[in-house]
Figure (cartoon, rainbow, N blue to C red):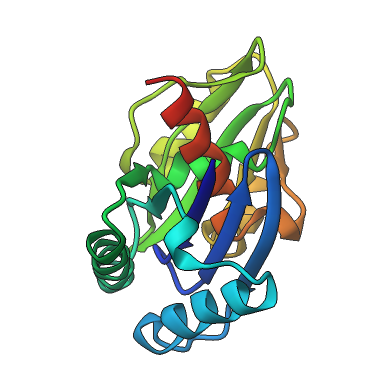
Length: 204
């Protein structure tokens, strides 16, 4: 199964190709360039570099939000245009699920936080159960103080990741049960969208 994945839910633009269980290419940039300028050239570049014919894709995976309205709209339009031209399905992957997937197999509670401004974040709480990512709360917008109150209720340590970490780092570090994921875990990435999309297709 060959999947083209697109992540455009934030300032990060990312595209990836997964072929069965192998990520053959990923191109990620976080430089405030509009997605309308970057996504198609990035897709063209990874296809060219891997000698991939777009007609060989079985599906297109797209990060479905939450996130930037403009980014999600551009990403979705790109995915829809390609899927229509190639006559293949689109798989919508929740952005926060993909971010949580980045912290694989941990015993801690995973809490991705995406900045929604005015001290609010898009967030959810996850854990791993027998190799499967399990959602503990429905994803929604919360004030950061509410996020911390829920996080305090868990007996386990809670690891935070996402662009909201930079904004709320001082408050996070005040609690000894709260940890911050390494920098490479904080960006949404198309390879995670691709891996989750493959799992979703296989579990249908």
